[in-house]
Length: 253
Image (cartoon, rainbow, N blue to C red):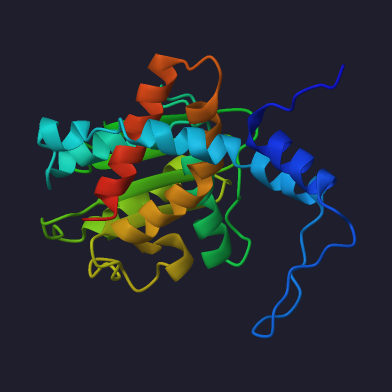
């Protein structure tokens, strides 16, 4: 008994297999029509499954951070950024966001700053790295391979000698590890409070949009896998959608 093909890919393959091999469609206005190989068509349409499923789930995307009103609040944005950068964060995207940031620093430093951590990586917000209460840093990332601080700016200006003080804190905490103090702003310009003795590789300036675009590229495949998984994990999908929503928000800062 002849098996009836199921799905678009199977039906197309069956259609072209039954097409007369010596039949060409042509007229005086066109060249002969060349049909693609059935196997190639089947491969193409099979690979469309995941993107189409992901697109279907995108229609349910919401903007929780707009509803929450995080706006340009530096404390709230810092907290969400730290959540994204935590490899063990509930966003379910693993070390994708952190890896994107480390890749930027790795390239900026010409390979001196590590592109990954090895055994552990702890992400904290609102810390005093050496216990000095005058130096409250927005985000601290402490790993076995590096020590990293992030100074978050959206609308507020710099305090007196702010980045210089943070560099001194980072150097003490890092010990023999590579260290850096990222200056994150809407414009991506350099800090004006860094001392003359600090190397540029220690104070990389990055814009919110640049970091957001790097995040977007780094997590797209993982997000697609989460969105197209069968059966769908509602909790995991909602967490991933929340992360994507914040990345979109970063691109607008």
